[in-house]
Image 1 (tube, helix red, strand yellow):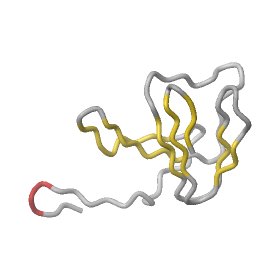
Image 2 (tube, rainbow, N blue to C red; image 1 turned 90 degrees about the horizontal axis):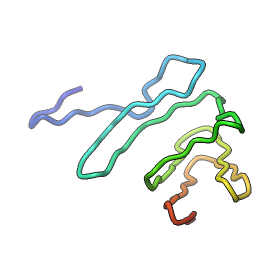
Image 3 (tube, helix red, strand yellow; image 1 turned 90 degrees about the vertical axis):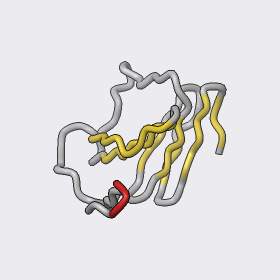
Image 4 (cartoon, rainbow, N blue to C red; image 1 turned 45 degrees about the vertical axis):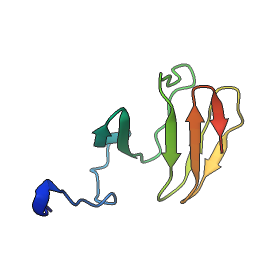
Length: 93
């Protein structure tokens, strides 16, 4: 849905087609801030292929549940409303 002034209104809960892999969609990119929506139906990264990145990340779980494992940390089980801020210098939250 488009509104005046070049604004776009969408709903984060709009369905993604079910897929074999987690689905990502870029929602905003401004001045070094990137907001993505990720929808997963239970996929996980293989233990021998960890996801490594060169930027801080804030994770907010809106629906369902998720397990988050960060190298050197215990696994965290997330539920709706939980959020974790991971800075390259360590975990906060």
